[in-house]
Length: 299
Length: 308
Picture (cartoon, rainbow over the protein chains, first blue to last red):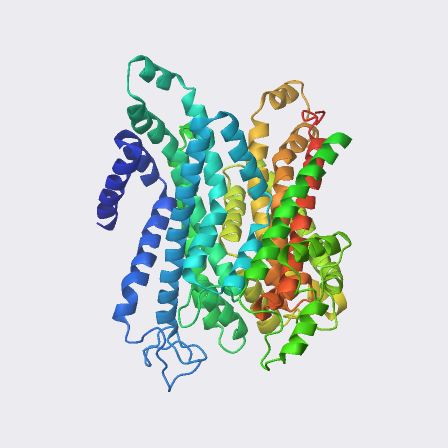
């Protein structure tokens, strides 16, 4: 049942973005990939749990249980996954942390998507000197040690979730720009575009009916591969103590706190690590599955 | 080849300039100054301090001074480690980081390449699925999760190896950090090697080699492996960058006195000169490594000649 309702959502989404035949075809191929489907279901479960879970639990994000500091997981106390050194419920905090990690993943990926698609499309369409100038800029950006510049940014401007969104998004758009530019350039030369021109189809319609549906496949693939990278980057920053600020938390923050306590309270490390690892694992599987489903070369 | 090297070195210059410039001005717009301590300094003393560090000069002049010092390898004084210059701190930490990072790259290649080759040769068998499944796990689980778990299991629960510390670079202290640092790269390299090996094995000249009647071992060793290595070579640049970035957290977790740990401490202490010095140093290192990898690539691939 779950997969059925899922499939409906998925279809309507693909219809809107990728054109009907391509979306339906890709979905059919994706459904045959068991690992990708299991991953998709697990991801939805994790996302939904993070969204509504905190409302079902009696503890708040920063609520301190004065009877349970660093308590081990137990069913009796109501702390199903134990508490941290400050007596806060670990399950609650992990779910709240998941919200932050997933929201960073979505927003930062979206930022990179918008910048990358616009940049790449303009560069590819206009071509000529502007194109080579814009791409030279991307080349230079590529060789910058971005990780360290982001860290510097976080140090200088303080820890702020909007800055994290923007900084990570600004780092990850380069590949997207290259992919979109390459697609645009290649598609411009193709016979079916020429045929559409010859038939008198207007430019805008060529772009919406022919160019975008054909370029969207690689973009979708790349988006699913960007999401885990972004989650990883956020956790990395958080782990270094440069991510979101207390009392807000994220999986990276929780893992970092758990590392300090791992000898006396290993669950503080293992629980958020497990959530992060499962999410990244599923995203990678889903990305691979989508690549197989959408890449015309594998047909 | 020489002219290509020179050209690449020249393009490295603007990249580094950008890194240095961004770092410099970011640091200057940072709220607060290096002398904002808990105690308010008397204005005369603060003015003297600023003059001593040339902070009273106009910004462009400070920038030029910093660039001039940088050219002489001087990153300026550390604001927190009062008796040390940033250059001294980097010179202290780098050999340690280099040892860990170099070993990690070596381990990644020595394990990743054979695993990828075996998976490609045993394509769609249990061996292939096991290797690739493990590799995907290695990619999905970040090193800052693997490292503490390794320390917990092998350092604390089993107590086979020290869970942290450097101990002058003794072998037992090296094992866990190097494993934690290399796992992700092993996984990437194995995946890439498998993919490119499969592609090479399907190509015409391999069919020709087989048709000539060469033994399978000769086909693989003499004809397949070298061209299959090329895409992996071009991945070495990102791999090195990944290991350098990874070393920042690994050194933190295992308490290793490399530049990565200095960098984190400096970031948390807002020791701006040290943060900036390490960013510039890492930037230069990554640019240099990318150049070396490109040169290696051209040396391995006879089709690529950088004559222009």
